[in-house]
Amino acid sequence: MEFLNAVLEFEFLQHALVAGALAGIACGVVGSYVVVRRITYIAGAIAHCVLAGLGVGRWLQVVHGWPITPAQGAVVAAVAAALVIGLVSLHVREREDTIIGAVWAIGMAIGILFIAVTPGYHEDLMSYLFGNILLIGGGDLWMMAALDAVVLVLALGLYPQLEAVCFDEEFARLRGLNVEAYVLVLLVLTALTVVLLVSVVGIVLVIALLTLPAAIAGQFTATLRGMMALASLLAIAFTIAGLAVSYAPDLPAGATTIVIAGGAYLAVLALRRIAANFRS
Amino acid sequence: MNPEKTAPIIEVENLSFRFDGGPPVLEGVNLEIAAGDFASVIGPNGGGKTTLVKLIVGLLKPTTGRVRIFGLPPVKARPRIGYMPQHAMMDPRFPVRAIDVVLMGRLGSGRRFGSYSREDREAAAGALAKVNLEDLGARPFSDLSGGQRQRVLLARALVTDPELLLLDEPAAGLDQKVEQDFFELLQELNRQLTIVLVTHDLGFVAGFVRTVICVHGHVDIHPTSALDGRAISEIYGGEVRMVRHDLR
Image 1 (cartoon, rainbow over the protein chains, first blue to last red):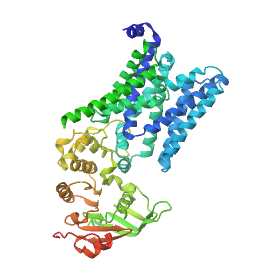
Image 2: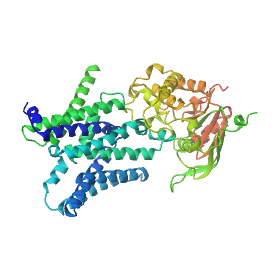
Image 3: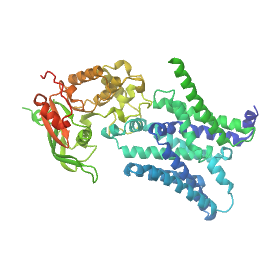
Image 4: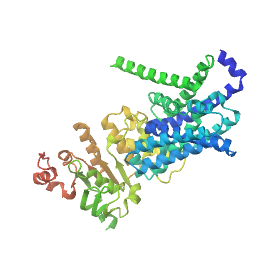
């Protein structure tokens, strides 16, 4: 009740709810691709490279007075990381996991270095890492809406091709699809979605919000399309629940959201196991 | 006489293949497959069967020599080839219905943006009917039996009306009865199209196929009727007993 009254009263909570909805839609759609193609680890590396973009963006803005925001730096870093990892995994078959792990750590390290040499605002590091959905302003929402639109147009417009590449890459290639290009498109979509989610739950927790709703949805749906729709609804529900539960006791909203999503996932797995035992 | 009819559908000349720096997998392969043939590629595991098929469809490039399908390089001939890969390659829990899997066969380089057309959907339903699964289109792929999944993948290969059908171990993991039904279906399809089938289970296919291509580093071709115990033990190293079927 307290939360509902607060939403009506405070603009920052309204912004947070809109941000949760915008991020949740892209999260469900792209998260489903990530889960069925099993690229969670790649998504994690991309997410951690976002810190480099935030750090460099903030450094250029504060120290050099460039007209760029940390969020724009995040988009550039995420897309660059996606392309590097994509090209590595397509062309270097050996030691792919080592290279992804290296990109993961190097991205993070660059971010920490640039944040260290930028005066003031060190508490920003915490909100980058763990998210602070309550700090999202009206201008941020427009950028989130634009990212969301790009992600959804590509992810849904190329659905048949992306579905086929995720299901059976070799067959897709034989049908004449440029599999490499579609894999890169999928990674760039993942990168943009990660940027959307970073403002909601932070870099460290992104992977959980990207994959848990899709993993739950996958238990109940027969098609990838259905998985995406249900995962989007779940992601939005978890974000709102996280905000509502964390508001009164003043807990971190991002972490609360992830605990709720993780609890829901474990509960679904347990209930399905019990149901299966009853049937047999 | 129509020269299209007499020209072989698959021509392989002096082909050899090795993975980067590795030992040769295939060497000195010459092969011709005529239109309307039902050919089986057999040989021991690791002998290069799947490699040969991948070279034929252009998923691998020959180290030396060349492959022509319908007189074209493999990549150009792909729209006219139906391909069914080894079943084990796919995630069995992937959320798709049978009809969605068949629809994937309708993808091509011409497609740009948006979902499948009504024409695609009709073709997919037709292909499911051809493999006698018309009622199971809406069922999740993961709920189907092994034999039904193989038929769905066959329908996916047939949905573009190919002239050549390539199947890599389509019967792996199926029980004998299901396998028998599957090969009977292939035999029926063979009236309209050329079939090349990879298998390690020679005894079983002998009753169905007309040509046997033995792959064990190099390649020999036999008409089915000429296969005898000596040829078999040469391929498998003498550990396999042949079950003789009544040859037609």
